[in-house]
Image: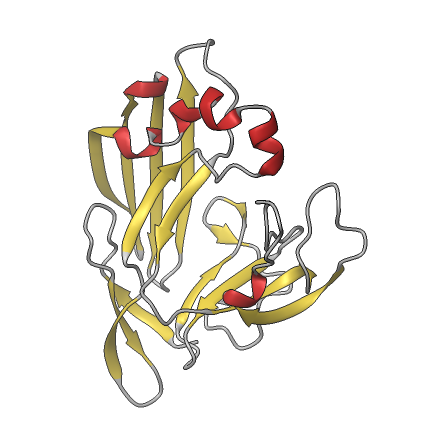
Length: 223
């Protein structure tokens, strides 16, 4: 992967241009096509239809798109660090929702989410997370975790823990009835990149301001 020199973080824009640098040149590259958004939904599978989840839990499907910003604060929190805090409400589900981005000079961005429900009558949440989109062409993934096939919390003993790689399309399995597919468990880190090796690294944070470096991809500029 190329070293991240500087960046334009697309928190509230559709622009995801980054300025990258290798040993010979600096160049611009779009890494984010759609910015991170709250996400509480996943596509129902065959088992979910049996419990009528597609209707009973439907309030969560578009809730993330209804996030209303109340406050945006940007502050320099270190010599080479900027923190962006965004707070607001999601009215359809009656919840306070906030995101804190810590942008470090080396190019790392840590993300912390705060979710506080105001009602106790909501149905169960299908999924908690964020979603974003990268431009076409970023179709190669690598990860350190269980693989190479899909694995789940209750079906993973037969999957080995090591470094794997493949294409996005290879993670899909055409089940006869709709089922979850391509999931990975016990993942230490993962990358999504194009055929030139340019892309994004996702890794957990062990404590504020520091990313886990255990088993990080060899040669990555942030290790």
